[in-house]
Image (cartoon, rainbow, N blue to C red; front, side, top):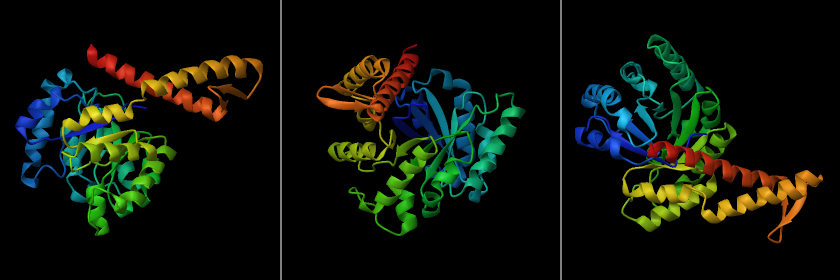
Length: 299
C-alpha cells in the first residue's frame, strides 16, 4: 500500500500556494479543483495544474501528487480529467463519491485518457472522498468498483452538512460514518484516511483526535495546515518501541514456533500465536514502506 500519513490540500487557482506546493513535506500533495476553487476559477486551476505537472512535479518534496476533481453530478468532471491526466499525476480524488457507478465511470475515462496520452494503463490511482450519507452507505461497493481505488477519505464537513447536524471538535455526530468508512476501506484492501481537523491551532485536540482515528483503523489524515504534518507523521508511524517488539516477536515465533512446529510461543511473558505474529509482521511491513518513501525523498 502507498504511504499516506498526510494528505495536504492546495487550492489549484491560488498562485502563491501552488508556488509553495513543491516544498510541502506531506506524503501526498493534492491540488484541488473542487470546493476551494470558485466556479469562475476552475479553468485557471486546470491550467495551473498543467503547468505544475510540466515545471514543478519533478522537484516536489512529497512523493505523490493527486488532484481532487469535481464529482460527476457537477458536469465538470470530464473537463477536469481532460486537463489534468498527464505524466506525473499519481492519482485523482473523486469528491462526494456516492456510488460504484461513479467509480466505474471514472475508471473508464482514466483508461481512455491514459491510452490516448501514451501512459501505462492503471498509472493514475483513484482516491474516494466519502462525505455524504449515500457515500457512507455505499463506501465498500464504491471502493471495490475498480482496482485503481487505493484509499478512502472520510469528509466530515460535508457529511455533517448532509446529515443536517453541527460539526463539533468532539465529533460524536461523526462516529458512525467515521468507523464505517475505515471498515469499508479495510474490507476493500484500501488505506483509510481520516477527516480534516478544522481547529488547526488546537494541537492537543488534534493529537487526541488523530490518535482516536488511528485506533479506528485510519492510516493517515487529510490536513489543512502545514503545522499538522509532523504530528500526523509521528502518530501514523510505528513507534521505536513497537518496531522493537515486532522484531522480537518475529524472531521468537519463527525460531521457537514455526521452526519447531509450534503455533504458540512466549515472548516477554506473553503468549505469541499466529495472529500476534501477523500483527508484528504488518508493523514491520509498514515501517519498510515508510522507509522506502523517506529514502526516495532524500534522493
